[in-house]
Image (tube, rainbow, N blue to C red; front, top):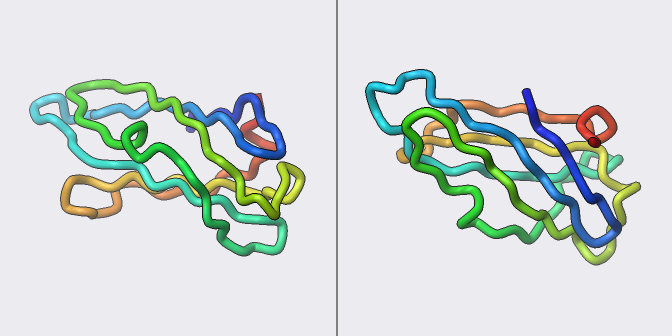
Amino acid sequence: DNLQIQNITDERLGLRFDLNNLNTARTLIGKVDIHLLDTKGQQLKVSLNKADLEFQIQRFKKIVTKVDLPTDKSAKDIFGIRVIILDEHSKILFSKLYQVTHVLS
């Protein structure tokens, strides 16, 4: 629960959070999916760098990426960010919706 939004504009937002592998006996491989929800509860199509969201970690990794907002939406239209962490077999390890106003830094 250390997700932070930084440098939010009407075109993009910066996103950062930490991943921890509590089972250090094996390397954790997977990816993070990011979805934005607008104030009407609709999921928005976003552009992001998928390479930023792939991971292979023994213990800890800091994820830092930028999310481009849809051209017809602005920052004030964004209600939340859903973060979904999947393992290498696409099994969901973690999923949470964060309200934007609670994670702005």
